[in-house]
Length: 417
Image (cartoon, rainbow, N blue to C red; front, side, top):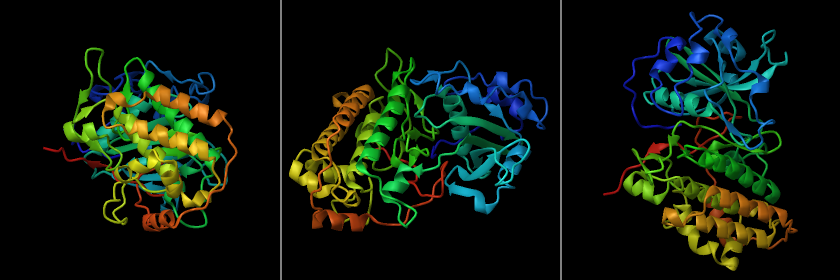
């Protein structure tokens, strides 16, 4: 997360007052979860959350709940689940704070005692922006249920402690698989990359298709998490915004996001469109094709910004062949790669109105997948190998819901004159 807006709200003192302070987001209706709690002890007993209520199996196309359906945890519960937030349970760290791996079981919280594995995000008490992002996560993700969105299980608001509890994502982030190093990081084969693209696209399409559209605003590889079967789920709704009403074309807001992924019209004007998310999706497609980071100052001059550099190559089959990820070792279907590059190019259109909708993106990706083209094995060019070598650098650790990995820090993006 990385919202630059500072909160003028007083320091949180008790979970029972949650709804009174939720002035933004999809709903203020956490009252049903919190009003019955009169003390900070054992407040999880008032939970309305259950495994059966998640809804992904019953509603494979997702659903928007009338109000957040979350479990309220006490700080002592989460302290026990993470073994007192021990350093060996840390999964990642960012501006919001640290994320810990935990084991949720009323009878046993030991590592070998079974129970549900969770990811616990703990707010850094010195984080000015964290409180607003914590609110946004509860308000948005607490109501949104979809197979391609990370599941928010519950939260804790006790004195100055703010925590969020998520499902644990076994395979970590897409970013780690694309750019991570070491024997523990295995390159993603072509079919898995396509599967991840489709899953992430479905998640965004669901957000955009809701009655009141949700603009995710920070789509990037580090916010795409993978479960044990490499199903993609979008995480981190700290920067999410409600989309424009029927009478509006866009939302005007302070420019926030991540360099290299933010749409040009948003960076230049602060005007945020639903299709601003489509641009970010196009950037991630290019990252999956090339294995190169969206922004990398270790590359030669003129190549720092991936999309600016790669765009001319996307429409040329031979140039694209030279830029494909060397870790694919040539094992990819050439026709499908060209089609994916063409789709990325349309997503990266300078004018937002010329970009496809996420539904159209999903349809295109599904057609590419259904073709079942057999991979060919072209040689990897020296040009591409050199670019890949320049791209390798240590990952910057950032808050995440998965095994230790890095991420692009999120910054306020300066507006252009």
